[in-house]
Image 1 (tube, helix red, strand yellow):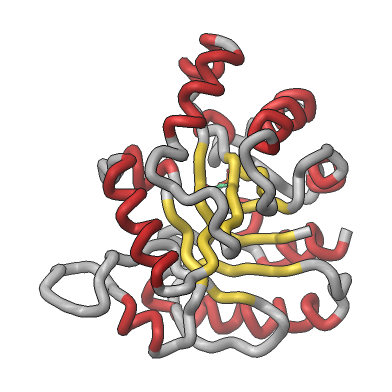
Image 2 (spheres, helix red, strand yellow; image 1 turned 90 degrees about the horizontal axis):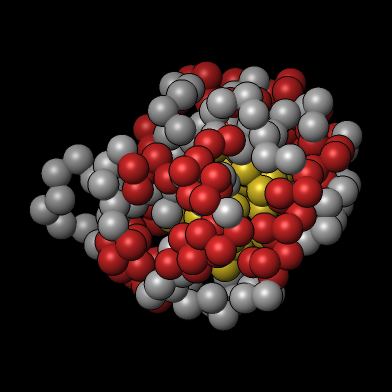
Length: 229
Ligand code: PEP
C-alpha cells in the first residue's frame, strides 16, 4: 500500500519538522512493502529522516526564472525532491489550472524524471449524471498525459468526497478503480475523506493500491494509525 499525506495549506516549517520526527517512529515499524509519501507546504520542503518520500504539492514547469510566487526545479533540487502532485482538483478549480496547463506540467516533470502523483476526480453533478458521464469526465482528465510513464501514480479523488467527511461508497470506489484499471497499469490511489475509521475497508477494495489523505493526515497520530492498521 501507498500512504500519501497532502498537507495542502496547513502546517508550518516548525510543525512539519515536529510531525516528521514523530512520523519517523511510525516508519520504523511500518510494513516494509508499504510506502509513505508526505506533501508538505512549499515552505516546509526539506530533507527528513526515515523511510519516507517528500513530495511537492505543486511547482511551475521551469528550472528557474521570472515566475513570481512560484517555485521551480531549482528550488526542489535543493532538497532532493523528485516527487510531485499534479492535477489536484483544488488547483484545477480554485486556481483555474486547465487540462492543457496540467498536461504541460506533467510533460515537464516527466522529462525531469519525477515520480508524478496525478490526480483526477469528478464533481458531484457528474457523479449524479451516471456512469457514462463519470467515464467521459475522468478520461478527459487523461488528455495529454502519458499513461505509460513508468513513474506514474494515479490518485482518483471524487471532488464531492474531498474534505467533506463523506467518502465514496466501497462499490463506487471499486467500480471506478475497475474502470481506471482498463487504462492504467500504474498504482491507483483513492482519496476523499479517508480516515482511520474507513482505511481498512478502502484498502481491501480491488484495484486500490493506496490512499491520498488530506484532513485525516494533518494529525500525525491519525496518519500513523492508518499506516499501522
Ligand atoms: C485531498 O484533497 O487530497 C484529500 C484527499 O482530502 P481529504 O482527505 O481531506 O478529503
